[in-house]
Length: 422
Ligand code: RNT
Ligand code: ZN
Image (cartoon, rainbow, N blue to C red; front, side):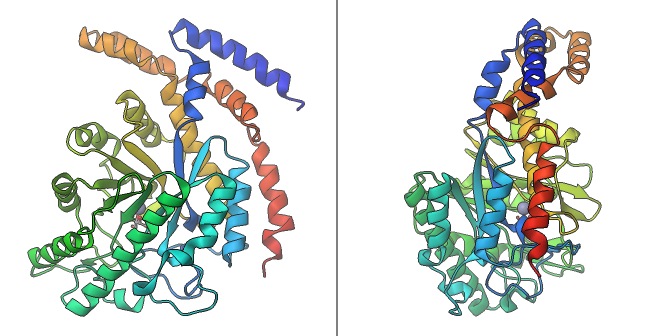
């Protein structure tokens, strides 16, 4: 590698500079290599899945853009993910939705899904040394068209979705057993109303009862973990969302299930970074959907902005790595999808690295001494510390492209593979 010398020299200097602050960069990159990030499969095909790939999206989920080259088959999706993973340093997991089943052409409705429909994914995960996570899919389906699923007033529809989620738990358990790492299964439902509801309590009571029913079977946490994800509003559920934050926070605390925080699911100035410390005192484990809200959209590709850095800081400073599961949730159909994964996931890891090279103990010491001057001075100084040199060195060590080197590879892949998909 022609840049090898430059990268090593820069790292040496950076390491010295951090050492003066009392930070061990070798230890930081060693730690970074152990932190798993669960990469969502749905960025690769705009949340279409393989059940009915051309069917319209529903349930407040919208992928806009028509950049060429989206994955049309499980094989294409897996190959695209492998490409992205070859450009991202560190430990990756893959997050699947029930929509991504493989049925050999047979029509399998959501209340009939079984572990065997995910065998190919499991074999691939074994081969690629990846953990898998899972999600029941309660959208893009005729029985979700009225905007209500687990809270639907019609018992038959509710039961259909209850069965779907129960079966999803068995698939998630199967992942955990096969791969030797627990699969986190996240329940997100679109349920809500576009306009002012008359009855806010009824749907919430029905959702609670449906979840109780779904969770009656106890599954070993060694294989499977349940999570529930809230939202403040969605497209078509602007006035009322059944599964609000208070609803799921209460449900999670009471039933010991993970609470999922999606960065795009709160009021525009409300941030999830500030929730982690508070929640960590009351729930055992937390799932993150790291995403980026832009006005009414909750799913832009994550950039290295203040909130992403704050999320990483809160995990690291709070020593929450073994209780916070980091998952990504964004989908952009207007740019190269392999690049979207690469940019977003590299950013997540970059933010984690920045948090790992903070002299947190010193800042904390200044704070308990009420020396807020030192605290502010240190926080500002850190912004211009050479963390990028540490990152480059880490990428080189992990055998993935340094700097923009990955972009060239994506462009080549686009030309050789993606643009041939017509
Ligand atoms: C939707 C939720 C949910 C989905 C995915 C596809 O608002 O964020 O997590 O994005 O499950
Ligand atoms: Zn989400």
